[in-house]
Image 1 (spheres, one colour):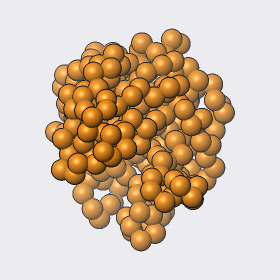
Image 2: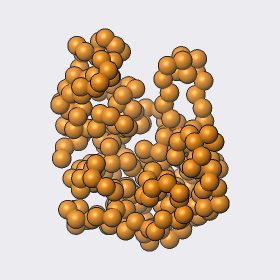
Image 3: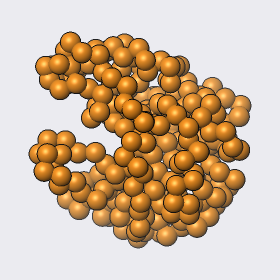
Length: 248
């Protein structure tokens, strides 16, 4: 069975975010699938969503749960999942057909090639690091990722070795394959006009995008109504077209 899984803990994202993501997947994934949500509070979730309780802290020195929880999902037997499993962050908008995310490189670990900005973008110096907003693995045969996490947990927590959770996840996966560039787009990187045009121009809809990722800020609801960041270059005008793909 094909699986979709997401994580929700704490109060930043409501159950409405999970349900919105589920509706988006249901609309754009035509074949059979199970939708799972790993959470400490399943109240308010759509009855079709399979809740999975958070596991116990495996021994992290910092707070639990946190973004490193994504590594736990790769444990064989986690939540009873078996087969190709696509992880989605809650702050994404499903824009187009999702079948390709299961057809591309079957049986392989696939992830977004993390976006870069500034001089790295200009020079093409793009590290081989994934962005874990959208990644796929094989439940039932990915325990080596989980075992690497347990064995090298001290490195996962050391920002001087792996500065982000997704850098460690890329390392633990051993072999990764990047999604085609157009499939997953960053709202901040590809929709926000360059300063000062961002103050007068509506963020455009990215062509060919299947999943629009709202990492950091703004969240999807903030992007719909417009985002007033502390810095002028971070501000964005309202983008009402997002409501066609994301709605609480």
